[in-house]
Image 1 (cartoon, rainbow, N blue to C red):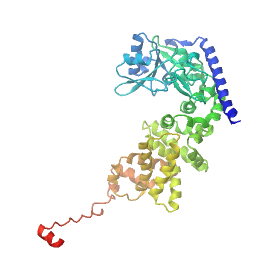
Image 2: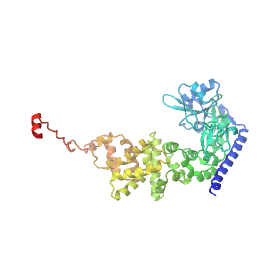
Image 3: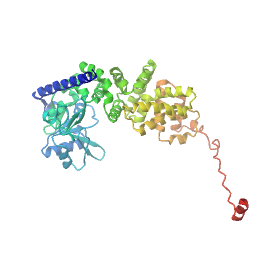
Image 4: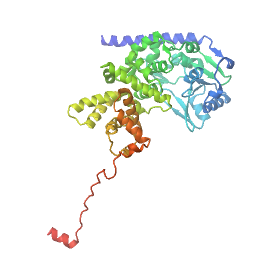
Length: 472
C-alpha cells in the first residue's frame, strides 16, 4: 500500500510534464512577436557598457546574442535593471575561448561568468527540454556518469545542460514577462509567449503548467512573490492556487539558494508587501516555522514587524540598503529578544540568554536557509550591543563608536525607537554625540572618572646567593 501511494504523485508529475512538453511544442509552432526598434522604448544607451560590448563581440563572431530576462522587462517598464543577463547559441567552451576574462561555473546549469573590473556578467547558452534519446525510462540521462539532464523523483531539475534554440530557451523560463529578448543584431524585442501583453496587464503568469514549473524549481515560487511585490503585479489566480498548495515544498531547494533569494526579497525596497504574500501563501511558515508561530501569537507582533520592514524599505529609498545582518536583525530581532527575555526570567544571565536564543533559532533556520556564519555572528553582536547603547550615560562612548558593528547596532536602535517608541532618549543622546554637540560630549566620562588600570606587581628577582639561601 505504501508503494502504491508513493507512486501516484510521481505518475501525476510525469503526466503533467508530458502535457507541458506538448504545450511547449505547440507554442514553438507559433511565430514569435517581433517589435522593431521604432516600436519600443529600449535604447542602447540604457544598456550596461560591458554587456553591450559582450553582445557586439558575440555578434561579430557569428553567434546569436540576446539580452534576456529581467533586464528587458525592467527596461520596458522604465526601471533601472539590477543586472544584465545574456543568452547566446555559443556553447560554454566557445564563450571561454572568445573571452579571456571568462570563468565557467555551475553543474546544475553550466554558465559563463565574464569578470570585469567592477562587475560579473552572466552569459548562458540557449537551452531546451531534454530530448527523448537523452532520457531513459526513469527520466534520467542515458550517460549515467555525466547526464546532461537530471531530475529527482519529485520532478525537481537537478541538472540541465541540454542546449537548444532561442525559442526553446524562452519557453523554458519561469514567467512570461521574463521570456522577452532584446536582439542586438537589429535592436528588436522578441516575445515568444504573452510577455508583452502580461507586462501591460501587470500579471505574473508562469509559462506552461504552474505545477510543473514550481516543482521543477521551487525557488520560482519565491520569485513570483518577489516580482509581485516589487513591481506591484498580480499573480495569475490559477498559479497562485498552485503556489499555495506547493509552498510546503520550498525546503527542497538548496539552502544557499534560498538565502540568496531571501536577500533579494527583503533587501531591495519591497520588504513590507512581500511579507504579506509570503505569509498568505504559506511560504513563510515553510521557511521559518518557529518565527511564523511567534508572528501569529499576537496581532501586535505583525504590526511591529510591518513597521520594521517599512524602515528597511525607507533605507533602500534613500540609497542606503541594509546589510544582510541588519536585515536579519530587523526581521527576527524582536522574536529573539522575546525568547532571550524568557530565558533571562528563568535565571539565566542576559547575555547568555541572548546567545542561547540565537543559537536555537539559527540551528533550526540553517537547515532550510543557509545563513553564513559571519552574518549570523554579526546579527548576535547587533542585538548584544543594544544594552550598551541604552545605558545612560554610556561607558566610553568614543571607544564604542569604533567597534565594527556600531553603525548597524545604531540603525537597529533607530528602527526599534521608531516602531516601538522605546529608548528614544538613548537615540537622541547618541545623535547629539555623533553630531559633536558640546552639551552632550561633556557628559562623556572623563579620564579622572575612569578607574585607572591596576598595575601588575612585578616579580622581584633575587641574586644567586640569596636564591640559594632561600632554597636551603
